[in-house]
Image (cartoon, rainbow, N blue to C red; front, top):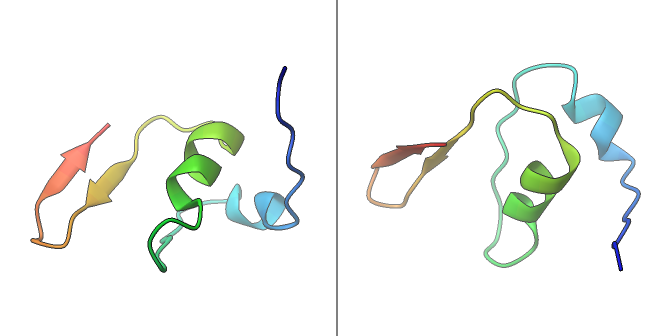
Length: 53
């Protein structure tokens, strides 16, 4: 079964660069990984290290 969640933010966020931040465990990574076509993205951790994906 495939879960489909329609978000009103998708059109606005898909138009260019975005910075997504917020509280823990609210679905930020899920939103990016499942609703956007991207060439690459970066996670910046609390200690300042960067992970390219």
